[in-house]
Length: 245
Length: 245
Image 1: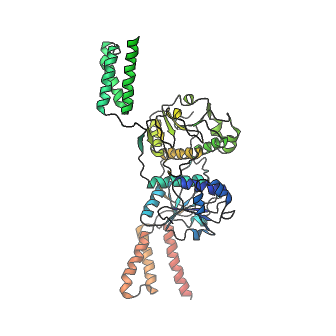
Image 2: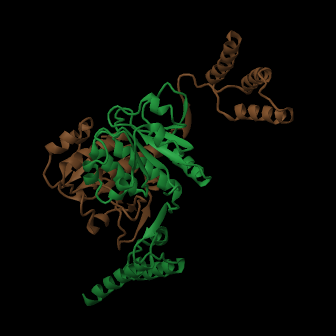
Image 3: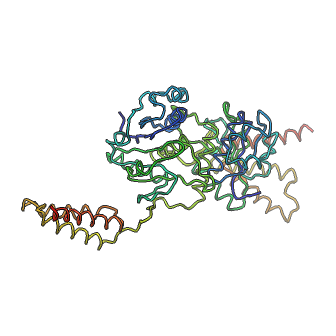
């Protein structure tokens, strides 16, 4: 069994559909270690399997427990996801901070679990007392109702963010090589020459400012080599059209 | 109409239930400006209303358009959420980077939209061509299937993260004041004295190390004042019990 990811513990889940949706949400972000504690409708659950399509393996390999203590017995650090503040004194983390913390702990050899309560009632204080840390999603206080699978999804998303090096911004496409400055310059020169012939820079007193604005505009755009070729082509075509006229 | 949040644009959504679930996901994170472009089953959609319970106002105030250009006509910056790489050349951002970017643009007076494609097919290239930027959720490549409401949820979550100052970790509870070091010391001294009387630090050769370990343990725990009182009480009670014996 993999120990490089957190265990996802569903405490007394009610609807099979929600268990299946949670399995899908887990697998969306590469999590596949589910433990199910005292599910209302027994185990295995055919409705969970039907809902989990594509993530059925998560359910096949899920472990079933009668009580929570057994489900987290081998864990060293346990997060409880709950929206409501409790009288219990615990550190409360955002999902991001919690999953970064979890990633650091797992890297150091700890065994980590993330617990989710039943759909309606949420976790009881007796469940939360088992946790080392509470995780609360910063929802709209006017409408804090996240369902089980949504909550699992957000934790999985943050887990993946904490463990995956993804560039924050990249340029994507088949011809994404950005143009070099000399190519931008050549484009500007081409356009400027033709526009000058066309009488664009008029009146004389404003011509210099207009030339600068044109060059500045082209310099500011994140043009690829393909873009530059197309803009050359645009200008050539206008000239051809004029010449044909 | 509020202009301090992004507009959420649903392009040709199919199932009313998904539109309702998207409305709920938006409102979970305080977003309530929905625009619906050419929904398959017309507008308004009773199934959307039934599903949106608690977030019905988002649908009541949603705007309906026949085509995408009209829906984003008043926007200055448009994000397209799509999982698949396209031949179009665009910057691709993570949800976090995109919503931070969106927050900065809105603060500077821009009007921002986030577009979501239809459930099965996703956005067409003609839709994506309207976008200034693509947003891709870093999902598990083996199982990248996020549904419409999940995608809306993750963008709303990142919007709220980008705009809400929430402490990453806080201590929550009714009596959360952390103990001062002198209180920890006093507790250590109390325990050490009683344990010494009880013959705990034995044999003599190991006593010093055992004392250090006890003090070190107490120093390492994030004890609140209430915790310290309880641990004093524990020790006092053990002594009382012994005295009664």
